[in-house]
Image (cartoon, rainbow, N blue to C red):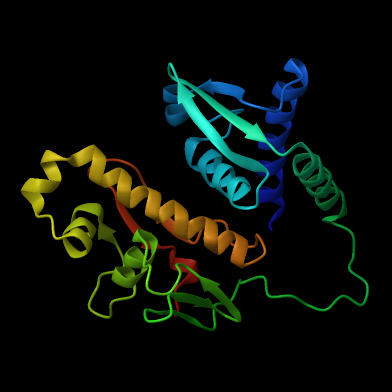
Length: 229
């Protein structure tokens, strides 16, 4: 993970830690109003950074399954042990970031992409030597379908959500506009799912694999630096 990414994680974790310790409550902790978080993120992190970090913590169990909105306020439950372990790990990683590595085996930093493909049959995304499972066999997810469309040899690098809704769900432009927020959010959540699986599958070294946005005119593409030249 880059130093910039580590600092973003630290900002997020320290904000949550302050809220939890102030109220002495790690169960159903209120972290703010959902609409405000959606518009602004938290602790100076924009929504996109907040959202990526939130779901990565949910995937590794630091944020438990119990999170919900009530009267507009967003509540979550933390696994206290895992939370403090991660806080310590991130802090140590920041401290050690500039220390010279002695006799360390050079790891792939993904600055050069030598292999990139998606096995549609196995639902495996391959980035260099990393094989990332996107969905279970015979249970293809929306994340799988988004990648299938992005890796279609006839597809443009950038695909609009309306096109994805048509290709995946068979809903045309009229239907998309009639159900705009429901459908673009469905695609957006699939992009989040891909982003977080890549984050975890690359040992937190790629946190920006997809470039995507919100809204009925939203679109998604694989970030140019990760495409094969």
